[in-house]
Length: 208
Image (cartoon, rainbow, N blue to C red; front, top):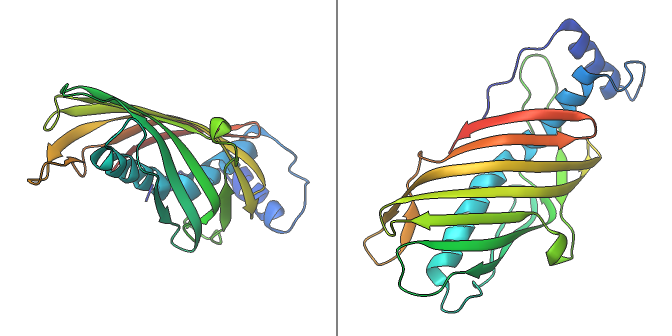
């Protein structure tokens, strides 16, 4: 889990007003950026899950289309990964995937300090072509590296409403599992980029 960023007295006051359903703080930059941070924190666990599903699809593919891969949120909903993978015997392959979410939630988002946890539920478009794009490029299979991107919007309900758009870059290492399948090396994946919600932007820099 990401370490909460320090906030000024003004930001804390704005959070209090929002929790009471008031709007006296308006839509200032601090308030908007804090909303973007919260919007991302609720999605943070799903990035690692999507990556795992992508590799599961890669290992299961017998044609260009990967078998759809899915998992559940810790509290509710589903996360679905679909798409295509390059065929052939090359040690370098790419995947072009889509991320679908339906009523997805990993539970309370712990903000730290004296702030109460918040709950956000996420949904993507039902139109696959409009779902967030997830690309992966594997190099030196089975014990090389990978790069990737995750870009697109998710709709939010609950303690935050509206949309959050991810623009993330991923890098990491891959390894064989001894049975002919390829896995990402745990703890080697670096995720950077932004999460944008309303007028706010949160800078993402985490390791999975």
